[in-house]
Amino acid sequence: AQSVTQPDIHITVSEGASLELRCNYSYGATPYLFWYVQSPGQGLQLLLKYFSGDTLVQGIKGFEAEFKRSQSSFNLRKPSVHWSDAAEYFCAVEGSSYKLIFGSGTRLLVRP
Amino acid sequence: GAVVSQHPSRVICKSGTSVKIECRSLDFQATTMFWYRQFPKKSLMLMATSNEGSKATYEQGVEKDKFLINHASLTLSTLTVTSAHPEDSSFYICSAGSRQSSTDTQYFGPGTRLTVL
Image (cartoon, rainbow over all chains, first blue to last red; front, side, top):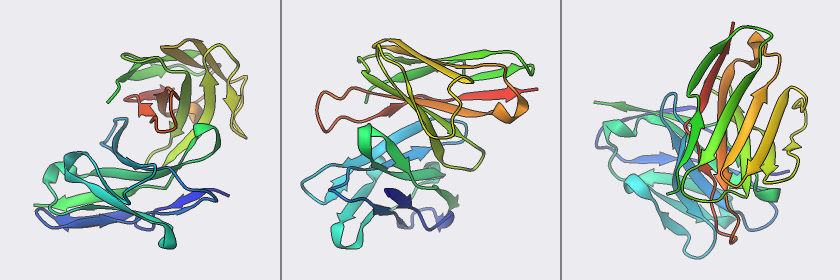
């Protein structure tokens, strides 16, 4: 069965520090992978997506993610976190019929 | 990216009444729209998939008679929560996509907070 695991419920980093959010997926074929960000009470904004090609994907707001097939991972990274990055982050894989299967989310807290 | 709107952003209703939530794709034609429900501090749960001009496909465990979905045009889908009860209180989010190619993406609306008293 298709699934997404985000093992970290909360992560706290200091402003200016680097960030890595983990995502592991289970999918039989080549996956389409996504990272979304959600601010409190808001919808989801697409940060980046991987469909094929270069395994290092650049997104908006300085985020990037690397697809590693051997590890079934698609971790999100940012070299220097800003206070405005505090939000909930969701990793997702596209299943059949274009349905998105979401991980449970990671809440990012940023220390001043 | 594409813009998807939802209306209303927040609604409070009495138990037993029905509530309609609209999802609109503002700058593209959405052949497919998805409706999600999100409980506090939880992930998104897909409720149903709606394709323009056809009946919605509901996920297992979602009552189709309670959550009526209509996708009458390429820019509008509606979710009606019928005979709402307090347990229906939740954050409802729609997304819209246009599968013109294999690399198209879903775009999400800002969500609707439903509170049933």
